[in-house]
Image (cartoon, rainbow over all chains, first blue to last red; front, top):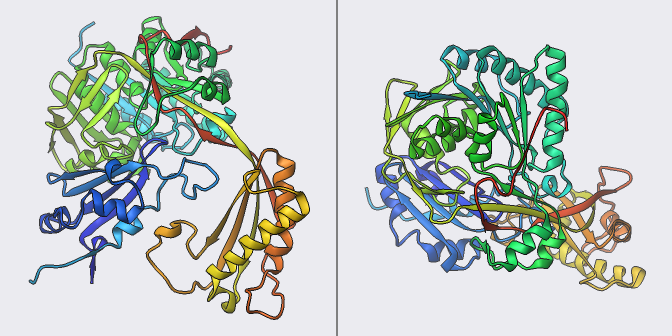
Length: 106
Length: 454
């Protein structure tokens, strides 16, 4: 089974200031971008389900000139608080990276 | 003075982070007009603002300052450092100024220094709040006066204007409190009449030094800003800027990849074009800046949430590891009971976080993988209103952290504590509280003083 990570050169996550978390998918080429940019695969609702956040707070940007998809939503836990386990939000990309993708028949 | 272009030397992404000495030499050889370095960030968490202490160590800051001050003196060009001391508190500015004074004495330099302070008084901000001049940024709600009072430190992120004032006033070196990451690199080009769109865009791309190149560790980057755009060139000959890396850097640590709000308006890179001039230099044109109707300064504040004590043990026994979630559930029940029986505390009077490193500590319920881990580090983080209580709770947990079995075991295991004592006091823990802007004018919230010594 193909995952989003298989289609990319890098998947990363990071704080965007203390109150937002941002994720980026760098797709390896245009066909890979087309697969990942398909709104049936990635949309505000699928991200909300993947990260247990409110769908209305999810911002999703498709950037075809860079073959990049960028997703931002409010940080689920306050940065540095007792239950925050990822100060820089640097390891939050895994649920997105491991999302399974249906490859079209070659 | 009118100039056709301004060359900004960005040595590194953080003062004290280190950079090769050749970065400055190469930048000067290429005709750098100004050196700018960011001294901080909120990225490493609320502790540094809350406690007004620096993330970097003194010797590392001194080492970088030595190269930067020598370079500024040799080239006869301004040096601009902002968000001094990690969070840009007044103590942070004074700390960097003190180190700069020592370095200049040792180096026989006497460059005119201006310090700009950006720490804010909670009472003054309450007046602004009452006047309706404080507004929340998404996703935060309206501010209340108590929140301002609860902060140990509050800073306002200055734009380029206080820095420009300092330079016009004769500063060779500007040591600024909290500033937007971009204002440091943008100040001198804007002062010399470069257009706002390319200037702010270039400043965003170079704020992390060489991170917009193929070899971030090899050194910094030079941005040449002119009337039509800007050109980026790495300062290490082994590194390259490529259109993709440069364009992608606009994504870095920002929620929105197309727009970035500054105090005086919004940078808009939707129409920007990125072209390779050769195999290591990139030209960017088409960046726009839309001035805002109202000038705003963003506030950052941190407050103490409690005092923390941590305990850490490790499990290798495959019987427990195969039932690790059950073991953690048993731990929660036993621990809550014992805290109640021993210390007469109810949940709500304290809080703790039990993290199973090696199992699901980092992602929690979002963890997509299953299956027993080979070993697990168990971290207990306790938070209470005072240090003594937090440590008492961690000590009550100690026998459980050492001997807790799974419920089906008929003997007590001994788990692997790495330390004695098992408990480590973390002191006060902080959280960021403010995500708000205040309607103001460019200079009103900032105080400027000349001289390297307070």
